[in-house]
Length: 430
Image (cartoon, rainbow, N blue to C red; front, side):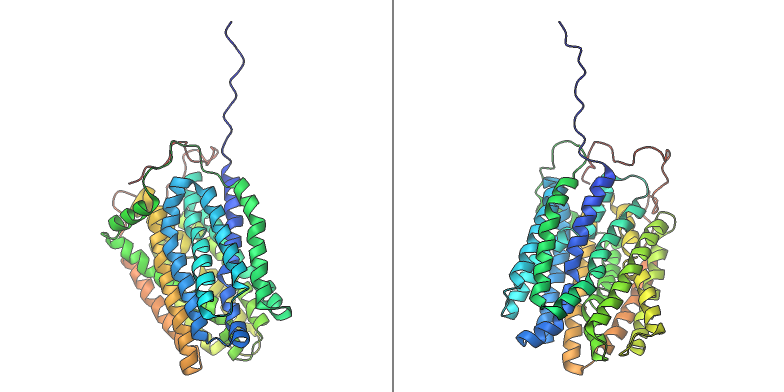
């Protein structure tokens, strides 16, 4: 007799928003590691006698490794899945922070913080947000990208006052140990929440080979170099100066480090609003023009900063933090949208390489800032130089051509009430 019982439905791999929430937790945790180096400049100089340039070298290596690992991590997610890569990244950042508590020589800071933490944070950075958005969402991709990018901002800035307080009350080693414990606590939650959409067999192409082949194809096109150039300036004018040198620069003017960290946290709060708003605008406006406006305004704020820094927090300095916060990470959604428009299914890997340029720019200015402070006793030339770079990036953004055969702005969905999860078939590699 034929069995008429219904077949069990296959278990769904997850819902888009559950996956996005798990990804956000991983991004928040990794983001907390990104700005601790700025708080460590003074303590490592005073406690261990290291020069600011040697600490800056560790930050340079961290940012370069962060950027270099991003495209390979994006390609590896196609082979191993997002969950395994995200979990491995949390293990790396936790190990790096834990080992950092035992440091006695500058080379150890380069290895533990520069290499291990750089690898981990690079794997679950904006390229991770781009991959989650590409695989799980069809409509409102700009908005979702903005939300996940804002998660990184939360990790980078909201925890700064707490970490600064831990350093003042206990030691820099206690702050590093707290981050290691945070990574360990986030690991099981991320493992449970992050999934890949149900699809066919995983790509058999080696992740490193795919990342390099994608780079070779993209490097033959003009838009890639324009996007990489503008994003390098983005890194130089954010991670390179603000996230690494704002706290010590404010301290040079007599401001307590805890107060400077609170200002960075205020930047982070407005970062969330600015990034989400930028994602919303990216779904509706020309991303090239958005980038030009963002870079031009950011350059003006940086040029004004040397005139605003004092020992006390006043209205002009608060206004700077608000404006800079709205602009700080707003460049990410339009840059991802332009990568998607020009490079299609390869966009996450291409954006990984564009992010590598971001970190090269950030690392170069982080090192140059420490060197300038040691040589001239002031960070003022760095602020002015970063502002000039932003003006150049605004002009570069306007020269970026529209992609032929594709709209820069994603079209609105035909049926808004349908599920926003991607179809079951995986995106094809181009």
